[in-house]
Amino acid sequence: MTDLVPPEASGAVAEVLEENQPWLRLDKRMLLVHPVTEAVKFLPVLLVSLVIGTQSGNHMWGLIALAVIVLFALQRWFTTTYRIGPVHIELKTGLFQRKLLSIPRTRVRSVDVEAPLMHRVLGLSVVRIGTGTGRGDEKFELNALDAALVPGLRAALLTKPEAAEPDSAPPATVGLDKAGLDIAHFSPSWVRYAPFSSTGVVAVLATVGLAFQYGLGRQLVESAAVSGFVDSTAHFGVVVAVGAAAILLLVVASVLACVRYLLAYGGLRVVDDGRVLHVSHGLLKTRQTSLDRARLRGSTLMQPLLVRLAGGARLDAIMTGVSAEKRESSLVLPPAPVAEARRVMADLIGDSIQSSVELTPHGPAAVRRRFTRALLPVLAVLAGLAIAQVAGVHIAWFVWSLAGVLSVAATGVAWDRQRGLGHAVLPGWLVTQSGSLDRRRNCVQSAGIIGWTVRQSFFQRRAGVATIVAATPAGQGHYDVLDLPAEDAWALIEAVQPGAGDIWARR
Image (tube, rainbow, N blue to C red):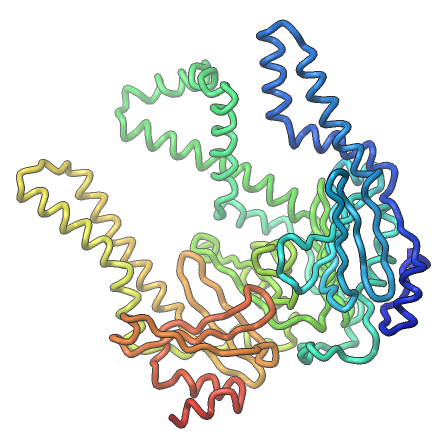
């Protein structure tokens, strides 16, 4: 593959060489893959056609729908070509509406490689090339390539000229003697964090929703298993029945979450060669992501409440050209022991201080805002219930009990939010942390911050606090320091980037 991928270059000579670069087609084995994947994607259409054919006695409807889907899948091979030149990578797609996607080689930020089960059986891979545009319509995907060609293609695209790019901030300090160092690998014990995520519950609800959508819900409700469960719990009362159903849901959801975790993250390896960070994981469907270290601008330690209570955390890289919304593209570690996540975080950014530094609290005004924002909705509900009670409306005891539970929960969340709120300024780094239900600790390289905003809402002005927004082309695009005392805002900016806030700090 490297013979067909010239090194990155620029100038008139490179443009001429690019015009002589041949257009290539995807692997012919995709003709076996796409009809199956498209049939699965359009399964509802096939089911509707089957129902119509069964009711009318004419089964040609199902065959016609299947034939259309297969022809639609096959035409993708005939209408898709790509070319990788020294200046651009180009992709032509479409039958009735032709589309040419051209991306400069200088904008390549990451290369993701996936191999679903059928692709793996046939020796194929799906290659997605990430750029720094952030536009959802600019999706460069090659589905499918010969898996043997992918390593050479990935290396060629991520190898940059020796001259530094003008828009690149200095990379994080990393020892280059760690070539090929395996900095993390999967441990089966990590599966214990899977039940504390919402994936299992979502899977159960999605399955039930599909069952009702396709008319299977009634058969499910009237089945012997469900009827027997309802009959066995009915004589214990509604509360016991609901509790038993909730426990059953949690058990099923936990099992599904564990299975999904193993399939998605089994075999995880994080390899650092000093220039590129390689992350691979998956059992049935494998995924390989290559992240250019020159584009690394920090990392995010994510600790949702339940995962945090179980002692776990997830680690994501903050990369230019890799959006934080594309979660799997920036993943470094799935939910794992927090000590392991902090260790990998220190290796990733080259410093152990950022992952464990003590944060500066934001003062009593920020604490009051945490409690007022959490408790005001609950107090409004309690006031409404009290008014209704005084007006003669009977309020059941369990409603008051539920309101009391919500009050305690809101107080606990507010306390946890104020306890986790803070920031730290270290040489070359800004560390921010906030949240309770979804706590995040962001370590952002100061050289990667391109702008600052000090923002105050009406209530923030009344409280004397402000939100400092650090803009960056990496990750989620901005990282906020919430509810800092307003008089300290520009001093913080000046401390992170000397000269960026001095004029405002003097005023």
